[in-house]
Every structure is written in structure tokens, then in C-alpha cells.
Image 1: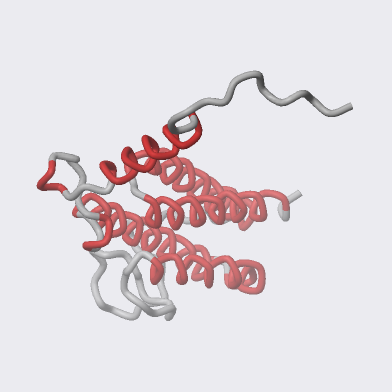
Image 2: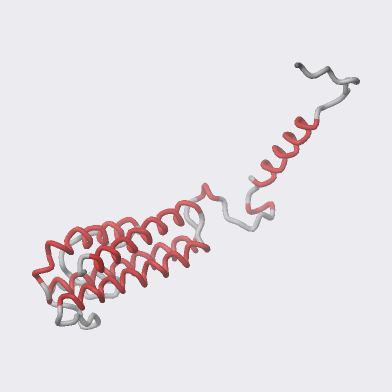
Length: 182
């Protein structure tokens, strides 16, 4: 059974039209530049200084993790087949954040010397037992992943997505390092 037509016809704009035009005006006002008082830098102008600092820190953190992988591999070369894919991902993370490219086994931290030594860096202590070394590496991955998740709040769009992706990868690495030991 069809509904009867409305008793009276309304003149003037409909409620949907008014709401749509008000929403459009609000969107246009949200697209203002920094000069107009939005307090944020123009997203099309490139990365903000906070974003650049976050990327530099993430690159340095990944480089430090790479140094840790290299130290474990230097002390426990039998783990090479197991750690090589995870280490390769960490190299990609360094590159994704704009860090120094490479993947050789030198010390890769931002403050490290340019030597190409295969021996572990003095700042990284590797347990003599391979199982403990893997647990230590998993702990480093987990800690860094947690710190990256906490840093997401302060980052805009693309930088936050990249950091979230790398944090998820680090959590997966921690899982793989601990599950293989069981």
C-alpha cells in the first residue's frame, strides 16, 4: 500500500540542501592556509619539521636495530639463515625513513664510525647462548615497536601510516624470533 502524498507542499530549500551547503562551507573553511589561523602547516608544502624529526629518529632507531642484528650475526653465524630475512626488512625500514642506504654488515647507526667491521659494536652486548641472543633481539624489536606505536599520535597522515606499518613489522619480527625458539 503506497503512502499518501504530504498534505502541504513546502516552499523554499529542503533541509538536506541546507545541511549539504553548510557542510560544504565548513569543508572549505577547513582548507584554509596557515596565514588564516588554522595553526597547521600546509600539507601540500612538504613534510613538517616534526615529521622530519620523527623520520630521522625512526631511521636512527632502525639503524640501531640493524646494528643489533649484525652483532648477533657476528657472534652466532649459525643464525644467518633465520635472521637474514628479518635483517633485510630492517634495512628496508632504514631506507624508508630516509636513513643511510646499504645493507653490508658495517655498523649502521647514525653515530657509528664508517668502518666496515664485522665484529659486534662495543655498545651491543650479545649473549653467548643463541637462544638468549634471539630473545634479546626479540625484546629490542618489541620495545622499538611499542615506542613507535606511542609516537603515532604526534604524526600526520603518511608519516603515521609508515611508522605504523614498520611498528607492525617489528611486532611480527618479535613474534617470529620468539616462536621459533619454542
